[in-house]
Image (cartoon, rainbow, N blue to C red; front, side):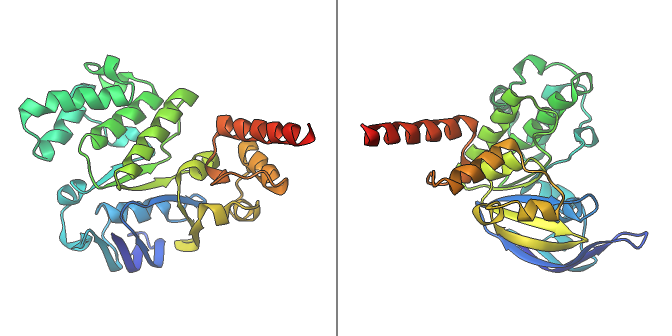
Length: 280
């Protein structure tokens, strides 16, 4: 459980990044965070992993008050992948990045190699094991940052723009990885403007504005129309517009907004087949 109790945070220059934020995030939730630049999104997630201590109020993570815990202690419970992955990479090789993480959570040396190899396979990074992360592309470095945290198996995983810089194949791999986390009842929180990614994976959406939570609701309620996206000046994707059109035509699925393009096509084809059978 993550609890924010009347949390405010003011930066040394006087800027108020969070303004009296209160909410609870249950274990196993998949939460997407939206909002304009400077709305407080990144400050919010940094409060969860203890990088930032509230100016006022309290943040409770798994019954621990982050104000009383070191960043190192919180890192064992909360993984955070920054938008700019270069800010958290430092080792001379991809293998050493993961090895350092595993060492920090007390994994014995005899078990670390196997865990490293398995994690790298999951994120299609096996061929980069001995390479410096700083010689990789931006998208590859992002996946290395993912790997360095995923191998620690924390209960809470946070990612800032996780699909940024990824091609379609790697994007789907990341989606699958986050889905598996949710199946294991891990709490997943993502900051993203990738609307299709949100509609397929998230169960709850928080929209920040000027340090406050402007809207808090389910994905299905949020994206029934363009109203919410208009508020934050985000254009609906073709995939989302197609889902709206299907709903208007009465073509539904168990959870229409979770469908990807292939599933959308399959839904349309099935509907056409049913109509043909009824006509005959």
